[in-house]
Image (tube, rainbow, N blue to C red; front, top):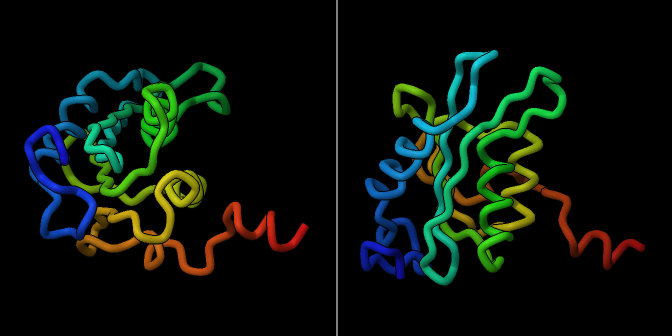
Length: 143
């Protein structure tokens, strides 16, 4: 169950998407983006109903900048782990952003193929967002 009392484990119709977007917008306001001027916020529900959020944290050495999705996954792990079940990411206008390829891999690792992702084309599973993904089972089966 989410903090809003929504069951986030059964499908997109039971996810409180407005609450998830609001959380992403709120954390985006705390992003540290002095170089790009492009603050990003991300929010997700974990399988135990926890709401986890993340914002981008830039650095003058651009290569060590943390994206919002990385920040969110760190928050997930740091607050007890678990699996992501529903995810969204927004820009400074509150518009949905698609995670980049690196971040899609992070989301696959911590949410798996059934993670629901709000995309610019609607709600999709990670299976649809990242078809033929490489994951932990590939390491086990192919090593």
